[in-house]
Image 1: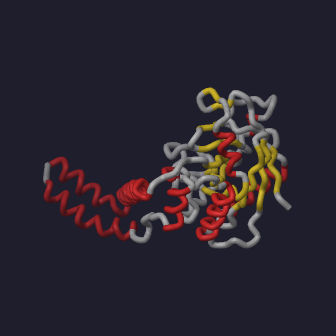
Image 2: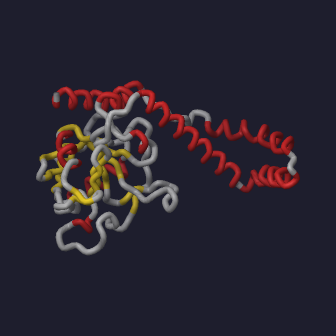
Length: 270
């Protein structure tokens, strides 16, 4: 069964990727086994940073500090090294990486994704300089995926609308709406929105998100965490050792923190 799942993942990754040539592989060695990960060439900033830190030995001796079964395992924080000071989950190399969020890479099981701070303090969704998570997740039906699509597109259009009304050149629309609201003139509010809606729709056009048939099949058969899609940068995929994710996700913990550190060694596969 393991071979069938791995073969399925490799097939879908092949369908989703724009370029399969010369992908760098890294191996994460743990006491529960090893995971081999392919890094995407389409996310070069994240790929190059992960390779750089790996070659420097940055990750060696760090542990998976946040573990949530049926969701993900998170690591990459230097504060988790033995003898290090600072709270686990707050450490890093001192910089962030610009987001490289691409629709062809979703949070299927085994996805390597960059951790980051929340939108409220990080609206551009810049990634942590070192912290990452690997998806375990669970199976998701096509019906559930459709709901995620609809919610994402609704939120995305609202964000475009908010940006539109914040732009100085559109201040007159805002003033007209506020004046109409103050006087209770609903006809004027409708008239303004009739003028504005096509302008917002034009910005939203061709920016809707929808899952491919291959992604729907992957979520339905292997699983993942689709509610994170288009929110975080996915920059790699576990191609060997999916069972290791399950082992690490099931370790004993208090809350989300493992009782015993499960440390890693990360190497570039030459």
